[in-house]
Length: 248
Image (cartoon, rainbow, N blue to C red; front, side, top):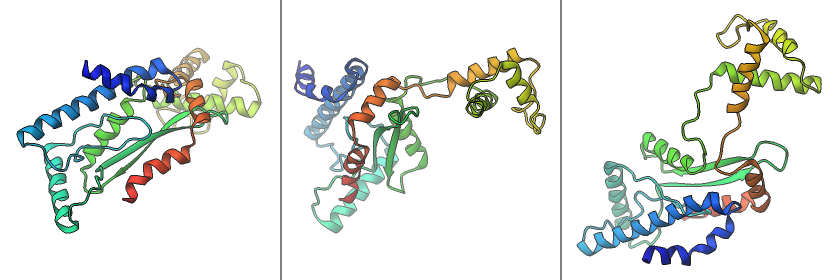
């Protein structure tokens, strides 16, 4: 019941989402995770086991709530020790600096390009690289619709690039037979594995279709929804909000 009341009281945040249903599930998970983390900290505090540096594994994310990954025990312990040293040197400071601080904002779309989510991160340089990688992966997970996309080959991407460049150059897409001949006539056609000639235009077209499907990132939001976010958000405001804690 308490968790439901928390969700109800915070429902105004849903108004900031273009696609309420698609974002709703992730939003609920984030809110519940934050609520349960708070309850756990209260429990530890009552037992006298709560670390003063509560932001050791934290991340300040804008513009939406975010459930960050937990730093390793060793890194968290070092973070707590570093906070103790800071308090010794600077006194009882109230600034809570996240070791890994990130946000995301949309761009593109309104200029005709494929709309994209962009992730920005600020990391204290002593944090181990593998933990930064895990933090980024966790952040990325909240945006991508495909967590394990198919392993499309370099060749398929190069074929898709070639076809789109030929189409732009000619003003229209040439026939598949013409495209295949142009590819096979490239001076470096036999130099690399991905540039080797195709036996027929059907195989060339099949490779293009694989590359075409795999090239655009698959986000939880559709292209139209992400484009609407670009229209309704100012990236400079998001970046300013992201930068604010870094100035403390």
